Every structure is written in C-alpha cells, then in structure tokens.
Amino acid sequence: MIDRRQYSRILTEERARILCNYRSVLACIIRDISAGGACLELDPTLMIPEEFDLVPDQGDNAQACRVVWRASDRVGVTFN
Image 1 (cartoon, rainbow, N blue to C red):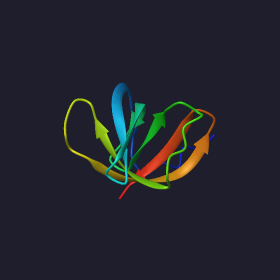
Image 2 (image 1 turned 90 degrees about the horizontal axis):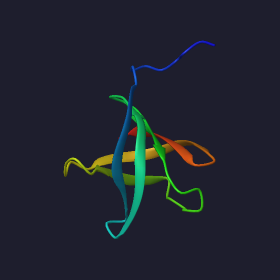
Image 3 (image 1 turned 90 degrees about the vertical axis):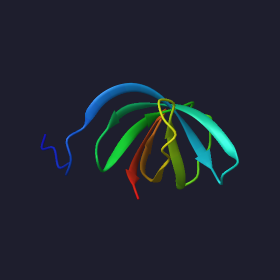
Image 4 (image 1 turned 135 degrees about the horizontal axis):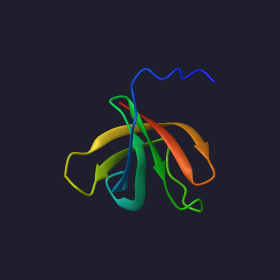
C-alpha cells in the first residue's frame, strides 16, 4: 500500500475537545496528528459538523478543522 500523505503523522493519545459553533463542546482523543491534519477518535453516536475547532487539553490553541473522512468511531480532519 502506498502512503500518499503529504505530511508524516505522529501517533498520540492526547485528549482534546471539539468546539462546535463556539457553544457545544465534545470530547475526543487525537490518535495521530501532522502539520496538515489529524485522526480523531470519538463516541460514534455523536454528530459533529463538517467544520469545527479542535482544542487539545494540553493547551488553549484552537485549530480550525474540516472533516475529510468518517469511519465508525474515527474522523479524519484537515487543518484550515
């Protein structure tokens, strides 16, 4: 299988929050991250919008994200 990713990913288990419309806050885990995006693990029953801000628990720097794929309890995002 050929890896077509533009950026190398770093595996992690960092907890984070998904901030939707500056109101709703949903918990997730960042499973891997790169300069261009991340793979997030979250409760599969949660509905998240196509665009949101991701805020790692280890900081206050929100990163604007856009969903590029969804699968079961994982969501792939690209950073805007």
